[in-house]
Length: 589
View 1 (cartoon, rainbow, N blue to C red):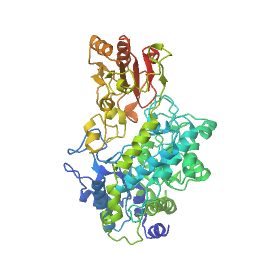
View 2: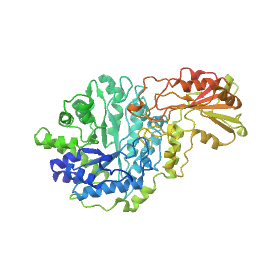
View 3: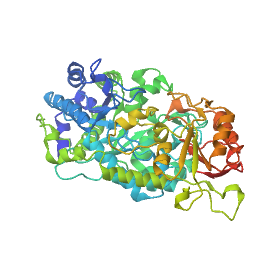
View 4: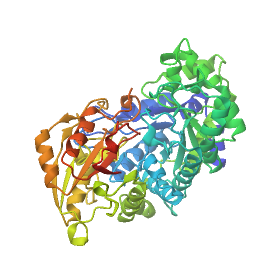
């Protein structure tokens, strides 16, 4: 890593602190529409604070902005190139751009959406995991956002936790194997002449985040040494062994100690014992949270000292929406509380990752030619959302479907199981299907969180509009397209369809008489139950029970006496309170 070392030798303390600073893109965006970089804001961050990294999508909130749900790869690339040219003008190395890429490059409009990690785990197929990682990495490189905050390597331990679907499940071995495969796929080198040449995975969240005591997001974990060793560390060790280039610490406390300030976990365990040598970044505002949330520091300045001066392991603070970190770091360095050697350690790790990605030229920086001028890079951008990527996503999705129950209709053992459904003209018995339930006609619920926006989207046009030409049917539309039977549709009940409403009950939209009549006229009922997309704190629940409105819908349908196939579209296990055992419910998927 000759270029990284040479850059470091020419840097001031302020330059090194800048390399350790990551800001949200909102800090350098102009007000109003269209969304664009504000050169004055950008130059301030580069000139005054010597900024080393940006993150996030300007569309990560809950609504479209300026008439769009996201930038495509070309738009992302133009934005990042603008930033990199400005950095070169200021004599700085290129910035590294980090972004959540949880199930594909889901913040890049037009990129292929892949199964959420829990679904991918249900395939038990490491080759699919590696291929999914490759597509995510390829599309992220095409967008010039090559640092992916994925995979999630927590072992799901509490079913209430709103991020269960983001994990590879509850078995440490499976999480380790699938996680290592995704890392390998993500970090596979691109084609000759492509810029960036590589993409970097970021294993997260180290460690114990997936074991909240009460199931709520960010709740602390109490872990014995044996639990930590046997359950929660193996996936991270597997990723380290697979060569993962970066890691993210976690929001919560372990045994009463905030992870972000734990020298025992981040230095003694992660660095010294596990052998991790890559870049370690905080999660969102976690240095500040030592004061604001964890109450472990008496002031923001003490929080910075505890996180950086104490652990000698954190390399970058995801600040992300103010200038406090760099200001406080410079103050602590000036009075000798954080020495130059400490800055060298972390700044060098950041620079080495940039060099590994193929971003770092030898100093002094020369204003780079636009990356998209490379013929290989043009082809890379054109590959986003390709037919072959879509075929792989379809194959992976088929492999994730999990059959929980499949019995013969009416308890008649002489008949075949209810699934697969076969139309009458293909030797089956189904001429008419009733499709119902809040998840039956919703791409947003099928896709889950981190789709277009942080909390996902319930506006199907946002998903369809970002992938023109792609086949994106809802379950209802797919059953209609299959042909061979008549398909009736009654919603049955309706979830609120707004962000932050996962605790709401499904409100009845059709009368019981109407539902019973439609079910009686059908040969089979497909009832699609589920929950709205969510992640993190907005997804917190106190009760695993699926809401009464949806459970009552199934009971009403069952009174018609026709076979029911229950399709569950949820991000975590939910209690059905016996609905799955109703005699008419012959299949659960």
